[in-house]
Length: 266
Image 1 (cartoon, rainbow, N blue to C red):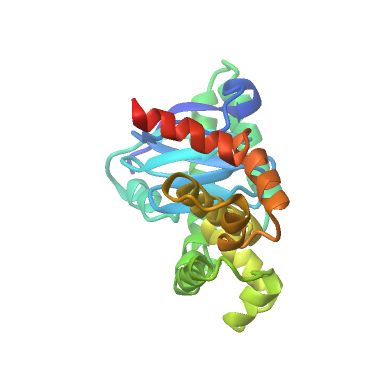
Image 2 (cartoon, rainbow, N blue to C red):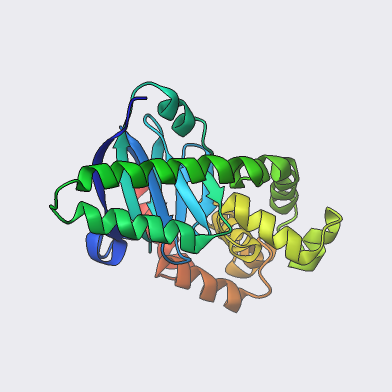
């Protein structure tokens, strides 16, 4: 059996390693990157999959995938190189996001990996390989016996696709969580979970972003008043529209439109 080459083991903390950044750059992975989040924060993006980061999941990125992360993010990580063999096959078939029930088990493995990697005692390489094999074993076992995050996403993808179409077509309505969930015969709690699971933000955040996106288009392509734009985009009032817009863009709607129009005139 061909063993993986351990490239690095460590702890990543965006508040230290990527200070002042809100999101990492998109990059193409060149090795297996296995991560255990330490806290519930941020969003992970791998190819076409996105997942709010939770400390009850393991992230498994494979060579050739495109990934980036919305911060804050803190995790243990191990980077491995392997090009063939049974272990390679095991790693390539893992879901990108694996739900785990025994966090302490994985945390114990990662802590040992981290500690042994940062010492230089005799036989540490043997211990590191043993712990790495243990990690791969549990990842394969847990990904098969439980519903992975990827499968959960696929199961509900059609519902979310329909929900997105419904929301974009009805922005002028009062799109409460209860109202939208009822359109798909789901409880508000369940709909909230699968929506955030798939989209990466809450329903409220998504609706607000879509309304602002439509507002921006109306600001720069029409002569509608702010009151009319607020109505067309589903905001309860002009004042609330202006408040939300300024919170998002750091400037008033009219100031934003003026700056965009000046750019087009150049």
